[in-house]
View 1 (cartoon, helix red, strand yellow):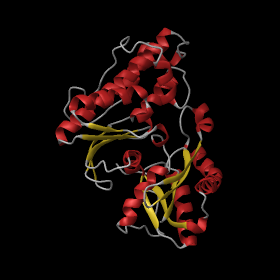
View 2 (cartoon, helix red, strand yellow):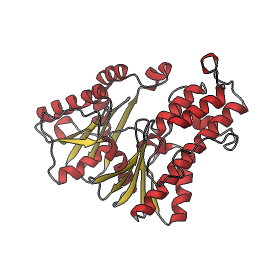
View 3 (cartoon, rainbow, N blue to C red):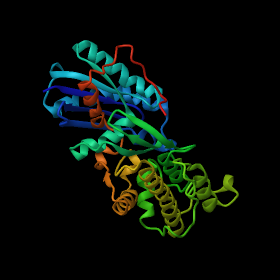
View 4 (tube, helix red, strand yellow):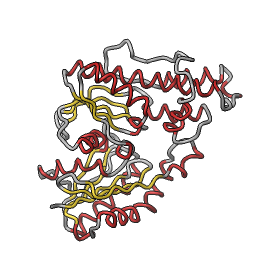
Length: 337
């Protein structure tokens, strides 16, 4: 049996996991930075990088402790090196290279986006490929044709804001705090999703593309009117809840519609959905209903594997089996799509 250590520092979660070459996850540790970024209403790259420097070694130690193994037991080190915030990625990549060199074990570079889809494979406990893959998070909203865990073809992405970014911005508009996804979802549970008719951009377009910037602006004008500079967030009550519910419904409608279009265009009957926004209960329910009608199989990981984590980097096992190792000049690559 080979033990893997995986490291994740692509954005604002410092994470480490230990798993085996049989995809058995022995430990999955995540240190959140939400409290550090809350007062800014979003992730500050410099703050994120410094927090990774403080947190990474304790997180790795805790992962090894939970797994019941020592550093010397490791047979491979994996790291997400793309995409993400370049300063944040560099912390993880540098640590992974140092560990691999010091231990004399292979180093594997893992794509963070592909890992989000592989989280579905990890949770399913069986092969899910080929499938349509949707990654929907704070930094990405994109559809893929996934012939295998390592062969992803981009079908379409967002032209502007990612869905998770829109949740954060709308949460700021409504005065709900950060992170925006859970805050908007809680508020939406008390509102009427039909109170406001917000745009569903590209809903009548066959292209597998997304755009959430106009939706965000529509929420802003519905909330503040035209005099945005002098406005204050709405107080708790029906208006705020209705705005949150109507916004959430618009995002869910578009995501579900584009997934349906992707399934029909590719002829595939499996849909794998990953990323932080996939934790949203309304989205999960709507995708489940759509797949049932389309005769498709839906794969969404449990909540712990939706948001950024290192266990999903078990995708490294696929590369390890193929001997696809990285060299010690591995660099952080902030852009992939």
